[in-house]
Length: 109
Length: 113
View 1 (tube, rainbow over the protein chains, first blue to last red):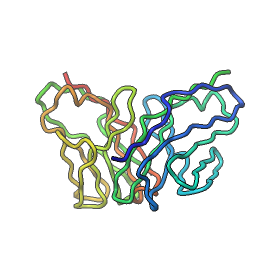
View 2 (cartoon, rainbow over the protein chains, first blue to last red; view 1 turned 90 degrees about the vertical axis):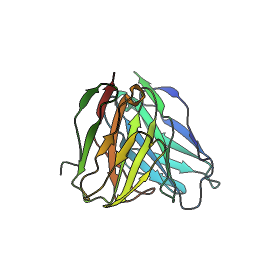
View 3 (cartoon, rainbow over the protein chains, first blue to last red; view 1 turned 180 degrees about the horizontal axis):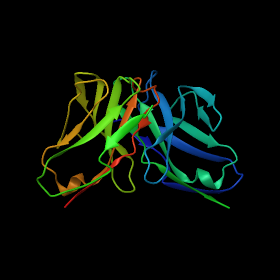
C-alpha cells in the first residue's frame, strides 16, 4: 500500500537553510514528487516538483536520490513568512495521489 | 482569470441534510478533484475527474457523489450529512495528474451538527 511519510513538525531560525524529508514507498519509474505549502485558512500552493536527482526554482530545491524512496525539500535562508505546513505528494501514474500528513514548519526570529 | 472558485465559504448542516458544494475553474484544466482536510491533518482525495463525463473514486468516497458535465464545473454532493463529514473541503484543478501542478480553491468549511 502506497504511503507518504514526513516529520510532523520542525523549528528553525530566520536565515537558516531548512531541509524537510519525505519517505515514499512503492514509488514507480513514472511517478512524480511534488511539494506544496499551506498557510492557515488557505488552499495548498505549489512549491516544486521533481522526478529524479535535483530540481531548483526561485524558492526551493528538491533532492531525489537514485532509489527515489525519499525526497528532500530544501528552503534556503528562510524567513518568518515561511512558517507554514509543507506537504509532500506523490503522483502515481494510475491517478493515485498520495499526500503526506504535512510538516508544520515554525521559523523563529 | 479567477482560477478555482468554491462556494459557499462556510456552511452548517444538520445531520441527514443534503447539499452541493460548488467548484468552478476557468483555466480549461482537464483534471479536477475534491479533497477533505480534517483539523491538523493532511488532505484526503474524495473523488476526481479526468475530463467531462469521467469521474472516479479517491481514497474516501463514501457519502459523496460527483458529476462532471462540463470542463469548468465539478460539484460535490453530500447525500445525507453526518457529523463525521465536518471538515474543510478543497477543490483543485490541473492540466493532468501526477506530474502537473494543482491549483486549489479557497475551501469550504462545513460543520455538521
